[in-house]
Amino acid sequence: MIYLFGAAAPPVLQLPDVVRSAQGRGWDVAVGLTPTAYEWLEERVPELEELTGYPVKSAYRRPGQPDVLPPADAVLFAPATFNSVNSMAIGITTSWVVGFTAEAPGKGIPVVVMPCANSALAAHPQFDRSVAVLREARMQVLYGESGFEPNTPGVRPPYPWAAALDAVGQALL
Image (cartoon, rainbow, N blue to C red; front, side, top):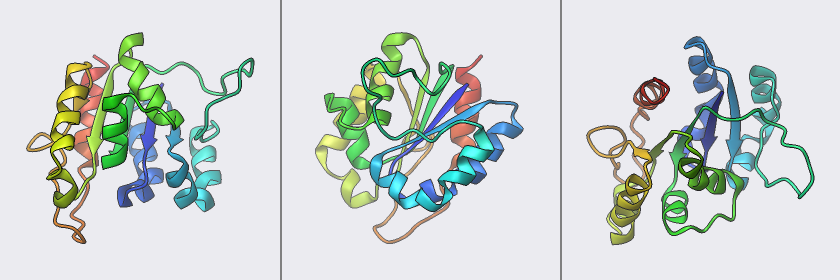
């Protein structure tokens, strides 16, 4: 079971196609979204739920409520925004997908994170520190030549989804 998580960056709008690509690799997929990403995809949530067979999760469950998703074998958090990367790194887990991802390495679940932040945001000194902290926490961060390279604000080159899915495949070995 692959948990495919997305935050509110333009590539999140491609998640139905990414789910199909992951399923084409033989993976069972469940989708989790930050609250804002959920709003962006609200009209497509039924499509994602039909594709995966699972509810799209965006909020913590209440104590005593059963989990609606089977256990994860790996997590792919892509796109991970500037906010999500920094929140995971400093332990601010106000959204379920950030909280689950931050906790996953401690549970032995492989995590692949691919940021999506423009070059102006990526120039902030906290961003490189946060990427280093996530790597120290045993997350594979696809940033730089190995994955996502920050774009000029307003320019949207293709997001390297294939690299993200390949990294998950390697993490499952």
